[in-house]
Length: 233
Image (tube, rainbow, N blue to C red; front, side, top):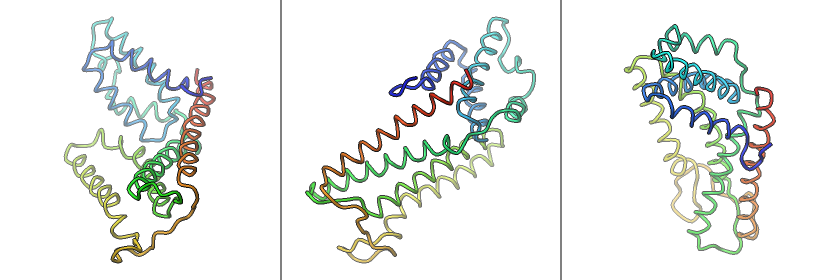
């Protein structure tokens, strides 16, 4: 078991190293297939094991002197759909860990930024605005995992439309929150909710607590991934 460097990450690295041994034209095929299958919330552990098997197939195709796409014996999407049908889906914990991790990093990052901009006051804290940013990042993380691969095998026209709409929504979520949701009591009213401290105390202590919590989430994720990976190997 690797808490600081999980066996899951080791498997990902091994697969990446093996992929580099294959022809470059195979890399794009792998990227399309993995993104497409990941969008159906398959277990990331099973996905990595599937990728390992596919790399093995590509290696055999290379030895046989044929294209990997020919080795599949059917269109990529059809091959992926068959794998998806029998593959295990992500559990709640598996989906939650990346969302919680990214939320914690956002809260920590914005806390440091705002604390420094305020001149590192001795008494400071976490505001409702920071928690809202963290929650928004968690939701975006969950949505991104679902959306990033669904458009791989649709027409270029619809793919461009989908990503344009997604990018516009993401832009307004990031830019618009501060201007249209939260009110800074020290300046002209701009939002609908006043910024309030949810937790207050020694600024350095709160910074240390947030850093420890972020590290704990990261290590907790490694531990959980490590345990789950044993079911697949």
